[in-house]
Image (tube, rainbow, N blue to C red; front, side, top):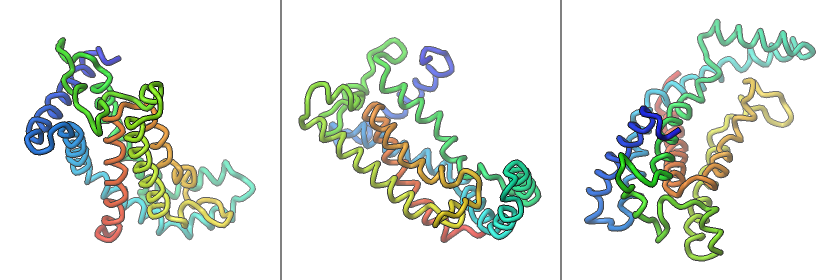
Length: 242
């Protein structure tokens, strides 16, 4: 997969960017420079995706405005789920609201994450040894995985992954606690006003599972982007008008 020319080119470009940032940070941060480079790269990506995040919040507010109509449709077609689904889709179409708008920032990041994952599982880049694999965080190679680390026993290296997963889990909890709107996801046994909203509210915890199996560098990306998501969404909800 990663030898496919377009993907290999993307990995090569990512290598250049991360190595350049690493060289910039090395005089100050030393061995953690590559990890810092990944954090900065993540922030750059998230800033580039800001228009999608704004659209996400606007769509969220639009769905909130439609909540009374959605509840009425649920009451009217409670015994006919197919009819309810059609009427909900029609309502969204008439109001120009996409129920999938909330997924756009996440979907847009997928190629970046796949590229970063490929970068840190590749032993060579353009035929040369992957120099990024010599960089560490807390003494653990950025290309190491939790499984590989645990196979060597519970030690200081494993604590690095524990700290990272704790951070990801904490931001996942904060995401569900502060970003999920009960009016959309449903509460107290009510059906969700937006189809699939309740399931979507648990998606942040999926990040913890993913971070458990990917290279440490990809875990750093996940920790950074999830923390950014919480802070960004809370800010945009105050700043963005419907």
